[in-house]
Each structure stands twice: as C-alpha cells, then as structure tokens.
Amino acid sequence: MALVNEDFARLYSPEASVIGRRFRRGDKAPWIEVVGVVASLRRDGRGAELTPQIYLPAAQTDIYPVRLADVAVRGQGGTGALAALVRAEVLALDPEQPISRVMSLDEALARGVAPRRFGLALLTGFALTALVLTLVGIYGVAAYSVGQRTPELGVRMALGADRGSILRLVVRSVLVQVAVGVVIGLPLAFLATRALQGLLFEIAPTDPASFALVPVLLLAAGLAAALGPVRRAARVDPVAALRWE
Image 1 (tube, one colour):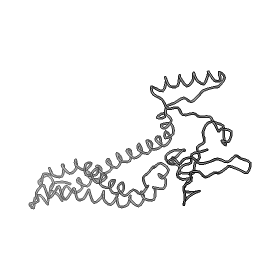
Image 2 (image 1 turned 90 degrees about the vertical axis):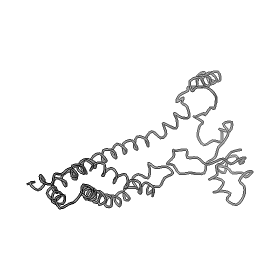
Image 3 (image 1 turned 180 degrees about the vertical axis):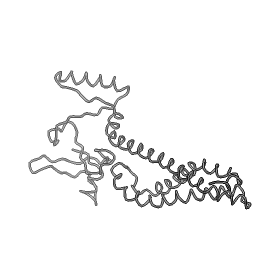
Image 4 (image 1 turned 120 degrees about the vertical axis):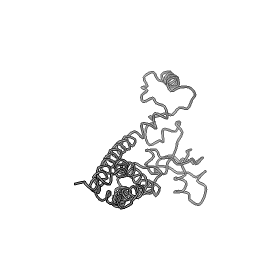
C-alpha cells in the first residue's frame, strides 16, 4: 500500500478517485495499492517544482527504489533529549548501526534555504551600497546645481520671489533628475528580473507592488538627500548672490 500526493492523483486519475487503484514500478515489481492522498510538497526546496510523489511505509522498504537512510521522529522535548532516546533505541536494535546528521526540523529547513538566504543577503548588501551611492550622487548633483544657480536664485529673490517659491524650484529640479533616472532604470530592472527568478518563492519577478513601491522610495530618498542643498538655497542672500562670481 502507499500514499500518493495530489499531483500524482491529478496526473494518473484526473476523472476519478485514485484511492483503491494499483500500480507497480515494473513488470516484475509487486503491485502497490493507493490507500490515501496527501498534499503536494516541494521536496527540494521552496523553489522546486511540484511533482508526483509516492509514500511507502518503512516496512515495505524491499520495494522502495533506494535504501532508507533518513528517519523523521516526532516527539516532545528538546532535540538533544529526543535524539538521545532515538540513539538508545537504535543501538539496542543494532549496536553497529551508525547515526549521523541528527537535527531538528527547523535546522533542516534552515539548512535547505541557507544558499538562498546567502544569495539574498549578498544582493541586499549590493542594493544598500547602490542606494548609498545614489544618495551621495543626488546630494552632490543637487549641491552643485544650487551652487551654479546661486546668481539666478539671488535675482529671483531680489525681484520678489519668496523662500517658498525658491524651495519649490530647487525641489522640482532635483525630483525631475531623480524621475529621469527612475524612468531609465525601470526597463533595465524589468530585464534583470529573470536573473532573480530562482531566488524568489510565491512572488513573481515582475511583482507590480515592488515596481510601484521602489520608484516612490527612490524619489523619497532623493528628496531626503537634497534637503541640505535645498535649505542652503532657501538661505541665499540676494545681495551676496548678485555679487557671486
């Protein structure tokens, strides 16, 4: 007898219940009867595809395609205490039977996603570095722009422009530059999403929420980086600005 997953049932018995049906692995292999259906799971990690799977009792290892090497035990208490009990039972049955790779389910899951976590941590570090460089660049460009436009700002203030209009002028200039960078970067980011597909789980590489949120965050970060030059522009002395060389 055996349990099969939902993908097996959909593939081999799409129109009727698979329970009670029999199958075998080859012409000389014994028949196996399906006695239940369980949910499908990704055995090779969250990024793996769902495939038809068969579950056989440990007592039927003679028809299992590979030797039984791993055993999952459910119990109460810590991993150390439970592992000691299991080790004692195994040694009582076979003193020469080695036991290795004893770990909890959480540890096994963490080990399975460790490569993906490392890749995401590395990408996060690169992304933060890129963000810092972007903020430094925006600050430098905004400061340079304000310095170059100091005479213009002085003339505007001498002709009656208030500080609010000067602030809006400088902020608009900075946001336009950031918006141009976002417009250029979005298509490039869309093309680069295929490289990230293997690191994502249950989220599309072209997730609309991400593509909508990131430009907003970049505009906000650009505005924050430009606050220093913007405040400097608002404190421009018209007389000193008109004498600027």
